[in-house]
Amino acid sequence: MAFEETQKFCPSCGRNVVARRKSTNHILHFLIAVLTCGLWIFVWMGSSVRFGGWLCSQCGSKQVRNP
Image (cartoon, rainbow, N blue to C red; front, side, top):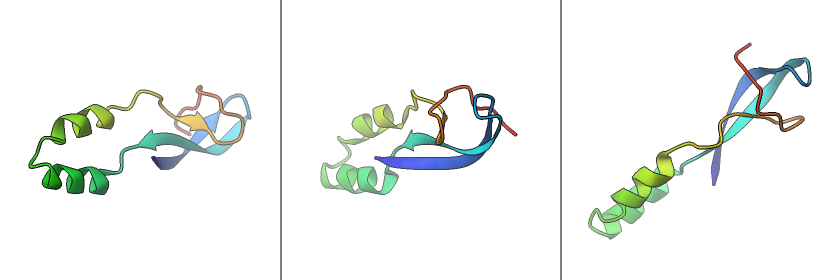
């Protein structure tokens, strides 16, 4: 599983932190879609939906917001 990272403000920590969220490895899904003649596209679309949101890398809080 890949991760995206960005700078966010965490009210729990009281400072700007690196925030992470799970991401989809699009290159891998593209290769599998090619090998399965496009049948994998439905799985790829489902895995591209982001459910978790951003998490503080220091304390794990979900309450992070833009700095």
